[in-house]
Length: 291
Ligand code: R5P
Image 1 (spheres, helix red, strand yellow):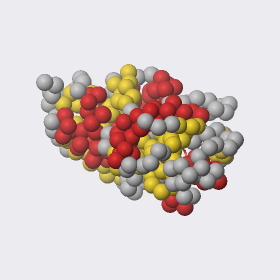
Image 2 (tube, rainbow, N blue to C red):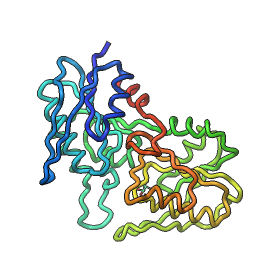
Image 3 (tube, protein in one colour):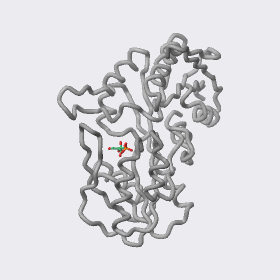
Image 4 (tube, rainbow, N blue to C red):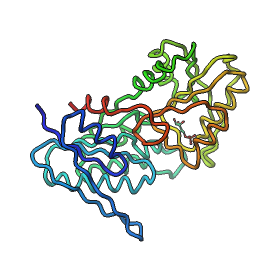
């Protein structure tokens, strides 16, 4: 039997503990102290011997602080273990996977270089924003899906004939997968994002959603702009209730409240990012991939 030790960073300690329990592995705590000048000091509480070390740390806000903590932990761990798996449940910077405007830097590629330089050999992540982001990391990697877990949660909610909606064409396949697991149909809206201001608009023609309960499915919610615009559009088409399912709920700048005010009944997300909406646990899908 493979012997694992799980080390949890500050951003993912609860999820890391759950993964450790599933792997029947010891859990090692880390401590982060942030000095008044903003620098962090990271300490690993106990140095494990002779095991495969699983480091778990999401890189949600404060993104760079959490990323630096991850890099620091891995760079320490590689001194005493030759086998490390780096689990980054929510991969920050994955949306910066291409040069949208001239001069833009593909930052996910820079993150890949930093991870590699720190000693990361293999990355495991959950529902990364795009396949391109995974490719740009240029590290051996695996992406697991939280869709089954999210669908399981919605099945328990016993909704009557819901329709699954992707807020943009990029998420069409995800919505189709969600709908097929839920044994229902799906549609995708057309979204336009101004690359300079970041503002989004729904540019779809009319859709047939009258009197139907809807589940908007997305990989992530950041400011909530995409979900709010989609909800307002769908409400104008006289739909019934709107629910939201997403893997990563960043919900920055009071997004949860704004989304509620736009008419969303409930947001359901996973614990790749802890928070009130994180009702779906991804520790099983992660530990199954590690075994
Ligand atoms: C975009 O392609 C993503 O899948 C999300 O829809 C988007 O990043 C969410 O960002 P926000 O909540 O700020 O609209």
